[in-house]
Image 1 (tube, rainbow, N blue to C red):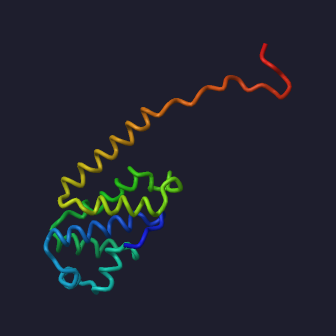
Image 2 (cartoon, rainbow, N blue to C red):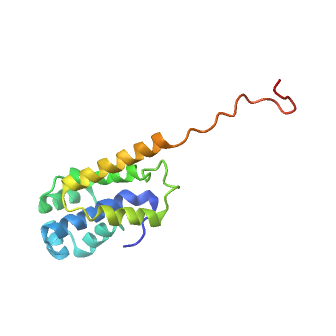
Length: 148
C-alpha cells in the first residue's frame, strides 16, 4: 500500500475499509467491481486510496457488501483520533498514517471498528488530561525592568 499524503488520509481509510469488507464477504475484487458497476482498475484505485470514491459509487459498494454506508465514514473518526483531520496532520507523517490504516483495516466487523474508534478517542482524551500543564511564566515585564 502506498503511504498516503496526510491531506488524503480519509480516502485511504475508506479504501482500506472497502477492501477489508470485501475480503470479509469473501468477494474477489473483480466480483465486487462487477456487482457495483465499477471497473476492476477503478475499484483497485479506490481500495488503495489513490482515487476518491464518488458518493453514488460508495452507495453501490455498500449495498453489494451489505454494510451501511455509515460504516465507511467511520474513517473520519479514525482520522480525527490520530490527528489527521487537518488540525495536527503535520505532527503525524505519511509513515505513521500508513501504520494506522494497516491496523484499522484489520477489523472484521463494524462493531469492532466502532469499538476501536471509541477506544482511540478515550486514549486521546486521557493523553490530553495527563499532559503536564505548561508552567506559568508569570507577568511579562518590559526589557530592563526586574521584578521587585
